[in-house]
Amino acid sequence: MRGYVFYVFFSGKAADQFKNKIRMGSIVGFTKPTILRPGDVDSAVGLHVAHLYQVWLIGTSKDLGQCEAYVNNTTQCPATLDQRSGTLCDKHLVTICGKSKNTRMEFASGDSGLEIGWATTKLARNGQTKYQRMDVASQASKNMNKTFTYVIPGKGPINTLGKLIRKEVVQDPKKVAKEKKAWTQFLEGRSDPGAMMIRKLKGIEEKEAVNVLSKEAFLKIHNKTPMEKEEAQAKKRSIDMLLAQQQRKKAKKLNDEDPKFVYL
Ligand SMILES: [Zn+2]
Image (cartoon, rainbow, N blue to C red; front, side, top):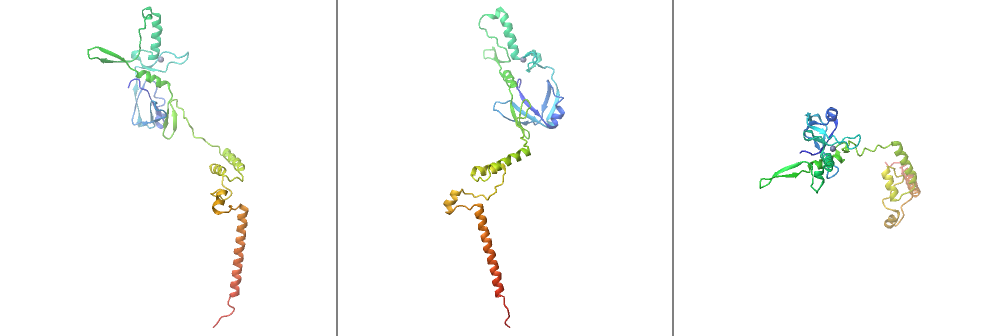
């Protein structure tokens, strides 16, 4: 696992309790952390803890340190290392060795490779020990410099710089109302499907009853055009009038037929 980088996000009680206690070199154990869904396929592993029982502060490492080289005048190299094996990270060790190689004549000639890094040993069949370069450390330092995004349940996507990527868009109700009014005015008197769709999206109520079919389709099927608002009102008025007349007639008729006398 040496050289392996993974990210742990703290939230809730775990963050409150440990934010000032965990620092560089802290040895921490995690119980049942949530494994986060990464944004990219090649992301490092991301974990999330929120409860106190998930975090165990075990102690402080004696040997873990930060690379002593500076990447510029004010920033120290962020690489962490085992101080028992030196004070420079692999990258800076290679740089320093390269510089000193150039100043020493015995190394200056030829193309003898000078490779510096972690190595594994392997015993060959003939009894010789073979050294093989391990690429893990370089992979880790590559991951250190990248920014990954993970999705924390209930919080949304967050990157390894601790920044929430997409915040909930808070809509200003005044702005929404203004926009709605502008759209209502713009779409006044229009009944094409586009206008209807926008009205639906913006939550504007249709003033007139909606015909599911377009005027042309309605004409084709029913052999007549759908009625306009005024026509429909006029028709309703006429029917009401007729009905009222009928009622009156009925009442009158009943009156007429009322028996004036009874047979005994
Ligand atoms: Zn370094």
